Image (cartoon, rainbow, N blue to C red; front, side, top):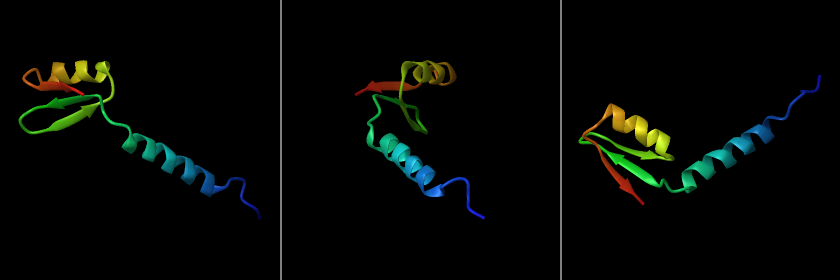
Length: 60
């Protein structure tokens, strides 16, 4: 019985997406005393600023 799908294509797409994420540089870095978080957009920044008001923001 032949498979209805080809696992190799989905694995290839997954690797392309992961490499794209790894190779793009984050524009916003949020730092607290115990952690460093790289953020992709200002909505994420707003969320972290509400949770950790003493954090420091660095724009690259």
